[in-house]
Image 1 (cartoon, rainbow over the protein chains, first blue to last red):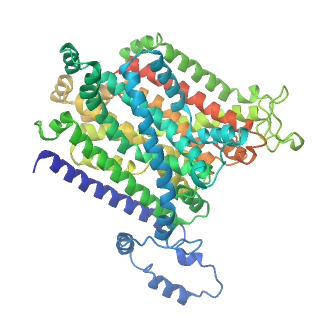
Image 2 (cartoon, rainbow over the protein chains, first blue to last red):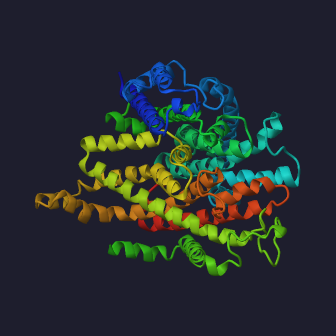
Image 3 (tube, chains in turn blue, cyan):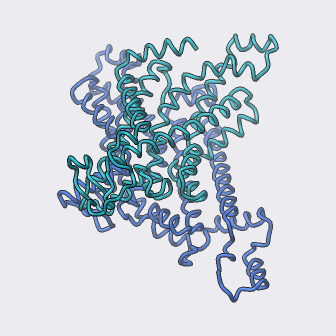
Length: 315
Length: 279
């Protein structure tokens, strides 16, 4: 077994522990909430005996640790409990909402990389040019814009003033444009700047100078030496940026009335529907941990310097 | 500490640092002098003057209850700066303490603290902040707790790695050989060398805290109406976005002003204090 495999296995184990810790935290929080589901049944026909029977039936009379293990077992089977407000299964609710969220987040992620990486490469390669300076100033402004306000601004410009696009809702391609732009633009600025600074760093390295001195054509230098090295952090960032995107989608979905998990979270919070809140947070944790784990393992795979740090020798 | 003053003098020659400093000064002035600057109080309602566009009488127009938008915006800077400053102070103190502990002692202390930062990072910050505010209920105090709770880990990680490097320096080893206590070594030899990084991190953490405060206010989980929190103003303005779009524009510009100002200040400080720091 080589160092990288060992590192990957260690990293995956670590992620499992992190997710377990989050489930304990979530369960503890739910447990600390005032009142249990039985108390919420506010009925005059409910006497002491019935309450006790109901508690026993749902396992609420057991110690918290046993309750947690029951709950965890159910979660592993895909049963996240039922919504307090409408009695629907939380898993079914999530499964129904997840596609809409994936729709905007994945489109945003794809768009972000398709636009930002080539522009960042160009800006870095032609450092100090008009294009570079323009890219730097535009991205500085974009990075300072809070994304929820960007959403409002886009609504005012495109939906209210010019009436080009729908304000909100989930109706075909046109309604996708504003939420995706809101999610993409700030992240796009970050990715562009990252690509640019990585290119600048690689260009300063000796092997690039050597390649130029050897008389290699500029395009070949760019492809074989600059691109390959500069894209390592950018690729890793792809996975590490998923948490930010998911966080952003909660607010973007709220602004644009997009029927995804983020809006469901916001509605569940307003209605104090804790099982739904718990289910969504668990789902988001899982998505985040999976993507950051992939990002970390990829770093080891792609970057020989980090690979060397892992095992003390270059694989 | 003299090196910090030298670095600050150097930062004084940095143009972006000076612009950031001017922006920060103007914000603090607006927050302190809000009662004198704003022509109206933030909650004075004149229903007949509702939803007026910007004019000589109401520089930035009025909202749906006829309140003066400019006065609300100026008073809002108070909330943004106060919440931001308190949250950043808490996360700095907690993060630095844990970072020093993990970096200096290593061993199980290090493993527990690093695991805690990993658990915090298992959730997108804004989602964790939303969860905490849901649990504790909507109020500005809980916003401060939520923001500090999601942001200390970065301080811990960076201070930890700095401490790890510093504790093996010859002068620290010498102090240890002389029989100085751990506490004294940390306070006299390690902390002073970490302070420049902490200053940069805290400056750059403030705009993040302000954006998160307004985001929570926007979602109805932070400041509550009639408080003129910029996020609250934005969420109220959404209903009137067709009739009175100007109400939505200005709070956003105010947030950008804060973010740009503190980013310039933080980047200027970073270039002067610790150019190799990547944040």
